[in-house]
Amino acid sequence: MYDWLNALPKAELHLHLEGSLEPELLFALAERNKIALPWNDVEALRSAYAFNNLQEFLDLYYAGADVLRTEQDFYDLTWAYLLKCKAQNVIHTEPFFDPQTHTDRGIPFEVVLRGIKQALVDGEKQLGISHGLILSFLRHLSEEEAFKTFEQAMPFRDAFIAVGLDSSEMGHPPRKFQRVFDKARSEGLLTVAHAGEEGPPEYIWEALDLLKIKRIDHGVRAIEDERLMQRIIDEQIPLTVCPLSNTKLCVFDDMRQHNILQMLERGVKVTVNSDDPAYFGGYVTENFAALHESLGMTKEQATRLAQNSLDARLV
Ligand code: HPA
Ligand code: ZN
Image (tube, protein in one colour):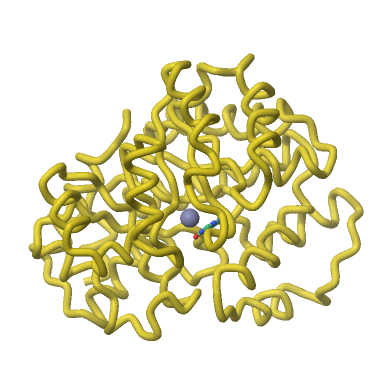
């Protein structure tokens, strides 16, 4: 089944490039940039990958990103991810990057963007993988800081297809970013947002009504609100679901409790994605495989999930 799932043509619509930083590359970049790490070796770092919630993960994810310093580092990070895509027949990807994670450490916006974008362009040419890049704002930071990041991005407007919203969800509702999302849309950018991962269904309503999002990232808590479920079914609003992420961050205690197939059978446009594969134990195929193993996902269901991902592309 793994090989069959691997061979399915698919799109990945929820992937944080910083979350694809494998421990081996993290150590190699630390050495290249002469950065001392708090972990002795790759195994010690990997064994720190045990989380009780989103915040515990984010603390380690931001610490890991500190080894990314030069344009070449961002290129190497993105290229390594694209090679995984190639190996798993991901024919199109719409990755996120978090510029504030880097600009707040003194790395210029254009250093980050140039490295990522060059790898994505080479990936189109050399690997045949098409892409659309999404600039994600960190929601634990202020509206003012999001505006500042947006202004830094505008000289490179054509490098992006959309803006997104990630980081600590609880206490940072989508309405906090209504004005910066309005501004992004006025520049012709599309919008997406993480909502309903740890946060309540109300955050999904806000993301739809105030941020005018085209896709809901995660959105698994929509199932708690029947009126919301009806809306996302009627309007066929895609959900970018990340099964391994949800179990690693204890959104569901066990994969057998995951609601993705229940949603699929109710007619929700759900897709399968890897979120932060270096931290959560696998790329897209591993996420599909986990659904087969724990929930008995059939080939027919996998085919529909993969087709949904191709249909839910923004570009
Ligand atoms: N949720 C919120 N922020 C994130 C995530 C996530 O799953 N991954 C990386 N940043
Ligand atoms: Zn995410």
